Image 1 (tube, rainbow, N blue to C red):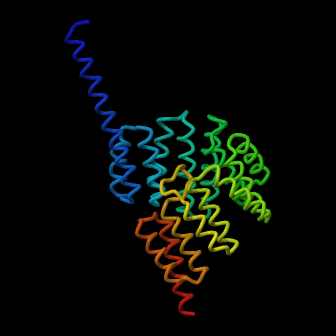
Image 2 (image 1 turned 90 degrees about the vertical axis):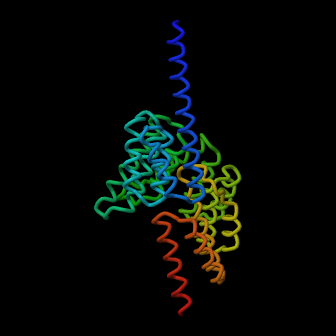
Image 3 (image 1 turned 30 degrees about the vertical axis):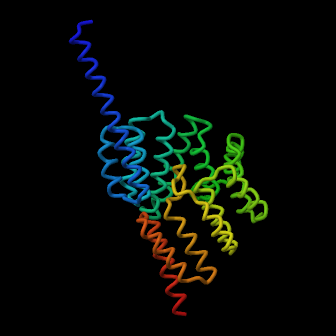
Length: 294
């Protein structure tokens, strides 16, 4: 091979390597910015990266837009992700999550349509990968929690639960616990939630366990559970870190510690939560104000 051609090929390879390294570095910077709650900087970096149609950039852009309450932007990013990576189950999981987020932005007449499109995304994810935990768990949650008119189906929820249990013990415990709680078998539900927490050790499972205790007015147990909430979400469907302060605020209020409850609200708002979370915090603040005036 001609030496000039060899040099040209080497130059192109090095240029490509440099571009890939720079993109990876920018992605790391964006993720680090988001974890520090610098949402604006994270979005700026991800928007630039997403123009290259890089998978992780598009996926993280959709995720950050969702968690920032920018549902339409998230949906655009997720649709582009599926367009570029049509055979990727994670892309379809992301699209389903984006449609789920859109449900908070549309009128009642469009809710069922959004729900069905979310379900279609998750169904496509498990069609591409029958063992896709994210797709299976999302479908399980959909069937278990949606009203019948919106596609809820408890029999389908049990089928999804069985598939989850066959693939992953932790998600098997978590999903059966949620079904048991719906049937008011609270002792069994708690036992399985504790098994799920031990197996999974994720933000989502500790948030679910803490919420279970809040619903039972076991406020100290709720605080103990949420104290184990990891600050770096492991999964797409894990709650955003500021959500832990919702549990703390509600638990402290339940214990009559109004000052501590208000401090938790302030701490949660300081982490710049997305639109929906921000509304939840403001609603708790309003409830505390009304309670104080009574």
